[in-house]
Amino acid sequence: MPKEHIDTQNLQVRDIPPRHESLQPSDDHVTLVVTQAFGPEGHNLVGFSDVTFNGHPAVSLLIRTPDGREGLVHLSPIHGDKRKAGFTDIAPGTRCTLLCPITKRPLDKLGPVDDGTGASYYALYLTPKLAKGHAVAVTDLWDHFHSRIVDDEAVISYWAQTHEV
Image 1 (tube, rainbow, N blue to C red):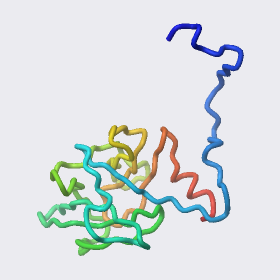
Image 2: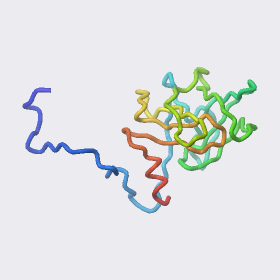
Image 3: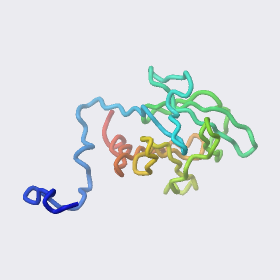
Image 4: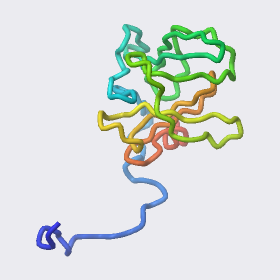
C-alpha cells in the first residue's frame, strides 16, 4: 500500500490486549445465536431442516457412529443450549464422524481438544469464506459439550462462559 494512504499521525501499533474490548457485555441478557454455519464446501447448514429451537432454525449435521449407523442430528443454534433432535440414540462418549448432510463430506478438522479426552474440534464456518478464524468448533465425542465459537480469531464462547447470560 502506498505510504500516502496511511494516516501515520493517527496510527497506533500495540500488542493485542488479553481481553478484546469488542467482547464486553452490552447488558445482562446476552444470547449468542448461530444464524449461519457453513460446511466444508460452503453449504449453509442452518435451516437445512424445519427443526427449530426457540424459533431459531437448527444447525443440522450428518452423524456416523463407529458401528456404521448414521442419521441427521439437529443442534440448537443457541450457544450453551445442549438440546438436539433427530438421530440421538448414541451412547455418551462415542466418537462420531461429523459430516455435511448435503455432500456427506467430513467436516474439516481444527485440532485436538485440550482436556485429556482425546476429542477433536471440527469446523462449522461462520462465513462462506470458510476461514478457520471464523468458526463454531464442535467436538467429535457424543455429549461432550466443549464447543467453541471463534470470530476474528477471538474465542467468543470463552467470553460467554465468563459472563452471566
